[in-house]
Length: 285
Length: 233
Ligand SMILES: Nc1ncnc2c1ncn2[C@@H]1O[C@H](COP(=O)(O)OP(=O)(O)OP(=O)(O)O)[C@@H](O)[C@H]1O
Ligand SMILES: [Mg+2]
Image (cartoon, rainbow over all chains, first blue to last red; front, side):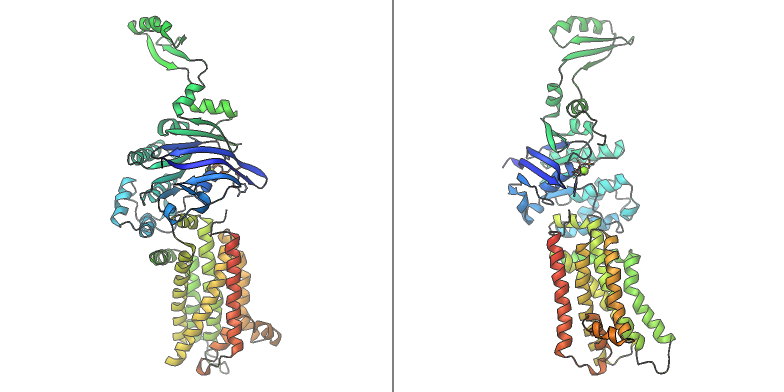
């Protein structure tokens, strides 16, 4: 069973709006899969369907080999989720929140300490969740998702609105999880996150997948120019063919130590997205 | 069983930090102690305040707290996370329900002590309280499940609670109200509380209380089906 998630022609209408339209993709074991899309694209809705919190109108979705309409305790034990609204107990302390779940998941208490140290919240363990910053809540919510050593993690915008340091910290934890063989399904509007972290991404716009693949390949596919852009130290910029024909000139520049930077003209995922949808990822409809 | 205990313990910790709920549990027992000591009027029936506040306690504390706890967990999505963490709906409800029943029974014990009952009367008093609190918890659960937010739960509980907790008192003043109130469990419970020294339970009393509980359970099931598995979308 190499596929952790399979969806086939998944569609959903809510209040006469087509929220998801003919979604088909697969997520393989051990990969980080990124669902990219602007606000309102249907990312959260998709996670809800995949985790059995909502049901589609038509099409098929499968999680860990079982129809998501019929998930059982067996599957629930193997997934960890971090939703947009973190679902933490505000009045309870950081520590009590995790201890409660430790009890439910049958994991020993000392693993709570361990995980608190890992997410750098050990010092704040006595603080009530209501007094935490957003970044701290994100980390705590992630910690809870990690607690049951899930086979597959569903993370809904795990880094949205966080500072670069916290974002990086979370990326580190996710990379660590991938090393351990955990499959991760995450949603994001952060292009950098997708390019850097994800093995596969799907670009979701208005409920449809408009592009799917390995991030680098997607960028290459839309690199219609296929050229090199060289910035020289004197501020001049030249565009060269990305071929052997340019080698001599580049060599010359290198020998004269005139090169400031070389870039390929392939677009970033962000540019691909704008091209495909006509709007920016972070933007709102 | 493990999950029920975990939910129960979580709720203990939470209550101590939740003043709105805490005051529900403490207010009437404390009021009873104070009023019972402070106000002594001749012709007043024995334990007037004790039985009156006991009946009001039943109509208010379990009902509002049960509804508020469930609705808050729905609103803040903690319930959804629990359901995805393999806590079953009945485990959650039993955990919260048994906790609230337990705390309310502690409150009832304080009220009972204020009444200076003999041992046998105390046992009967607590027995009646146990049934009344259970009925209120069922109604509170139905409202909590039905509501999407805590605000919504409050706006439903307030009128319901006023009816259940004040009818017994009002029916003491007005015969017409008494005729209608008879069919409400809190009135039945209140009547029983007034005769703990010589309790006579008829078929009618039992039927009304059980009937009320069945209606509450029915409403609960309807609400539960409507929001399928505690996960209101
Ligand atoms: N219960 C609902 N009833 C009707 N429409 C809904 C409901 N829930 C979501 N929608 C609509 O579905 C669309 C997708 O919502 P969703 O929350 O999945 O978007 P998203 O991609 O997660 O956005 P964001 O990045 O802002 O979190 C939105 O247009 C939203 O208005
Ligand atoms: Mg979302």
